[in-house]
Length: 80
Image (tube, rainbow, N blue to C red; front, side):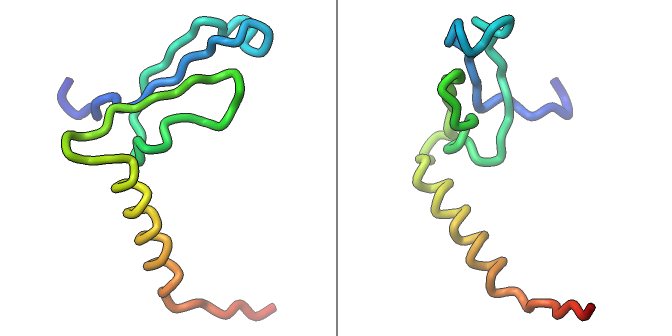
C-alpha cells in the first residue's frame, strides 16, 4: 500500500510454557537493521529478509560506522 514500508522481519512465539496466550502468534515487522530482526529471548524465534545483494555483515558494518561517526562529534560540557 502507498506510504507503507514493506515488512522485512518476523517473530514467532513457539514456546508453550513461556508464550501462554501468545503461543503460535506470528508478527510481521519492519526494522531499519534487518540483521537484528528480533529480541534475544528463548520464547521468540525471529528471521528477516535482506535486500538483494546485502548481507547481515553489511548492516553490522554500517551500524559500527554510524557509532564511530557519533563518537567523533564534539561533546557538550554540562555544568551543574
